[in-house]
Length: 414
Image 1: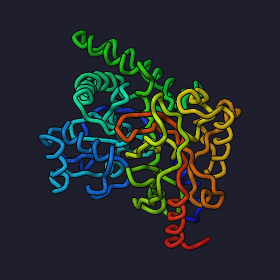
Image 2: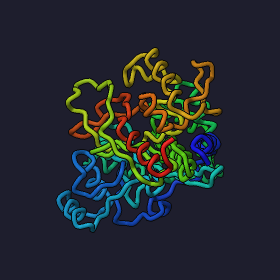
Image 3: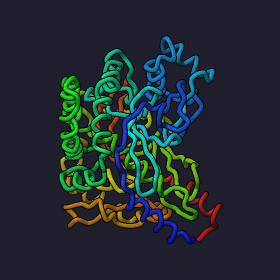
């Protein structure tokens, strides 16, 4: 089929997805190809020696948490020798927040796109402390929080989700857009709506689990970012439905590692097209400065590939308080993005724009032709680890130019 037809098919698959949370299981049980000695991290995979800074520290922290090494030096030696493998989340059907660390025992959300029969996976939110493994920190406090997620939150949620027969996520996401979320940097409404869906099933759990249930409900609602990982898993199994379409120039993944920003394209296989780091406009937490900003990976930008996050900013004016900017800037940015997408999403709509569908299906050719760069909402990591702010980033043009060149080499110039 020609490019227009292929892009339209990709767009239709993005819009037709029906993501449902069906289970929560240890990564080793559900991620295809996962091994006990594998640590997954964000972005295009690289040789171990190329990982630097917080992303390198996070991989080492994952190895220590999993008991694969006695200390950081031992972990680094084993990673150098290949006794501990490091690989990219996307190739396992998963997506990683910031450094995106997965180890075998960590619980992951299993989200099924029932329209396409594809699963997407995401690990669970570590909690409110800005010092987290996915932000390049591993210490006793991080270890305790990871164990709390693994031993308390995950079992409770798994029981409730199984009792419910699965939780459809698209209705939650659709409604959350009408309540001030954009399903990336703001998930306040979605987290509360998700918790509401679980309430009847949580109440029916064994009375002996009451303390665990109470602590789980607190974790679900205390800062309203819990749903982000569900949004990511839903976006992954949605975007993967648009992969492998011959002739498609629609982006199916966007990701960072510590060295690059990169994209994948539906009609160009699993190849990553690399560019430099994105440009960033951020609001930093008190006491932090721009020279502290560090890149350590990130794949939550999968949300933008399906018309959420930065592509739905005009639905989330409260983000001004969190990541800076203004309502007017959010609207202007959102309107620009219609120029680089295939169509308007029939399910994800923006009230302020008269319930116009979000711009969905990033077309690499339109990005290059117009010069309009995808906008993404992200958390900002600091060079010493931890989250130091939040903001909007713009993808670099270089990866789109490389993708267009590869497209024309494969399919011919228009």
